Length: 140
Image: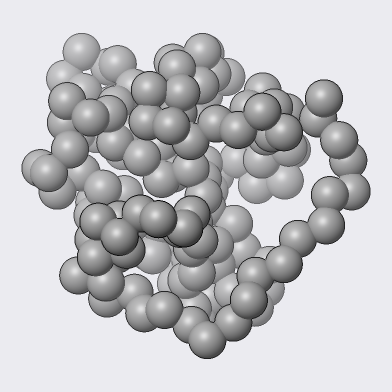
């Protein structure tokens, strides 16, 4: 897998990947999520491509000056369990360290114990916090 920065021509393939992997939600418009990321820091939006250049993985990375965040991390089901997710995380970590980021965070939706185990094996720990959110812009 080759890791590179997202390009606008990747959009349809990335959204299809997110849909195959169950990452999209009715209240989040993936096109708007991509537009928002690309307007903020497009160098932290990564895609993994196969030998033919097709999108097979993604990771949207954020940095707020205090913590890094990992969103939309996924690998096509046909390519999972081959180290590609780990490679994306390692690239995200390198990019964040270059920016002076001391900590990487991510969120896992409830009921995905296998995914929680995966992240624990990569060194992530559960924090004793409640993550809360407030919608500021509706994506209807």
